[in-house]
Amino acid sequence: MTKLIIYDCDGVLFDSREAVLAYYDFISEKFDLPKINKNDIEQVNKAMMKTNVEIINMLTEDTNKIKDILDFANNMSFKNFLGLMKPEKNLKETLKILHDKGLKMAVFTNRGHSLHYLLEHYEIDRFFGCKITSFDVENSKPHPEGIYKILDFFNIEEKDTIYIGDSSTDYFAARESGVPFLAFNNNLYEATVISDHKDLIRYIK
Image (cartoon, rainbow, N blue to C red; front, side, top):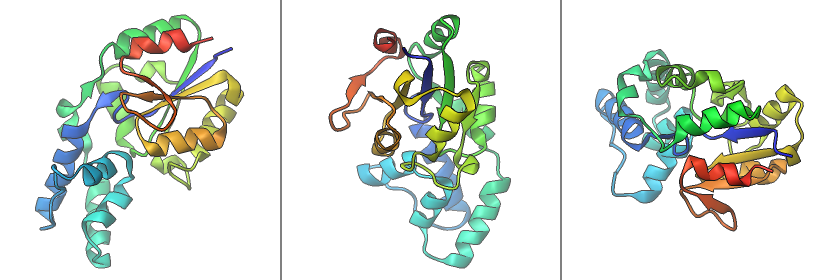
């Protein structure tokens, strides 16, 4: 019986492509780095699913500059870019339906501290009993550490859980943990794909 839904954030709860790219454009301009090539699908996908540290290391190999950028980024608020985040279709309505059914919900993301004020800004923070960011684990996705932390928090088994993600890092984290996986708006290996949050309801057993 389904008791717990774990969501990825970027690309699942929100269409965050414009906001994330604008954020890294700002950092690139500040430190005179090459910007992420919007026409390079692989580079854009990495920006959407990797941690802040991994993306900055992708932009430059200068170790001294990396330290300065990370210090700057850690003190810089993502709040300036919240207006560019777009909640996915039927998100809030579906979260309310699941909440009213008594299901537990959580977020596991490679995003950092900005997750918390992002969820508060769009008034959906109250739906998630557990939120795991890149700062809460030693191993970011695709390692399943964050999933294990969520399962332990709620004391719920893998078989009673669904993880929803949009990237290969989500897929492999779910597979390694043994949690059933749904792909959101993206074809990932053999995973079932949903393209609207309301579609999730029919997969709840």
